[in-house]
Amino acid sequence: MCTSNTQIMKKQDILILIENDIINTRLISILNDIGVDLSSYSLYIDQLIFKSIGLKKQLRTDELYEKYFELLKLGKSIHPNNVAELKQLALKIYRFLVGYV
Image (cartoon, rainbow, N blue to C red; front, side, top):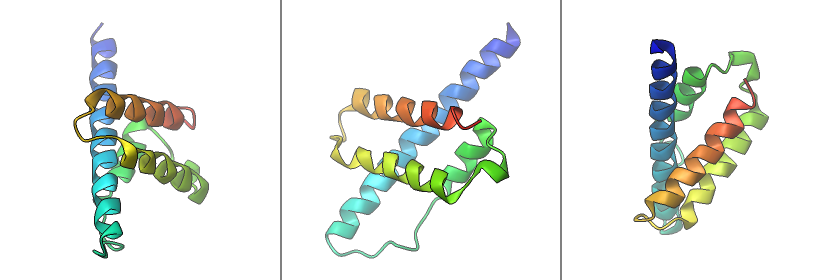
């Protein structure tokens, strides 16, 4: 039972990280649209997410990163107050990443 609770908490923590990465990516995209260059700005949340999910370094290919960032960019169209849609996208990204493990 303890392991199951730990796994549930770990999944919830990862989902929160993904949600924050979606929000961060959305903000960067909007700021880029108005001319603020943030090309060198990154929180590197993706690396923590990949490690937490158990993605081995050899699986962290350019293709994986490209797809991950492509999915994050879908969050740009989500209204900031639409928590349900944000959570839905985070879960979609989580399932995509878990499929790589």
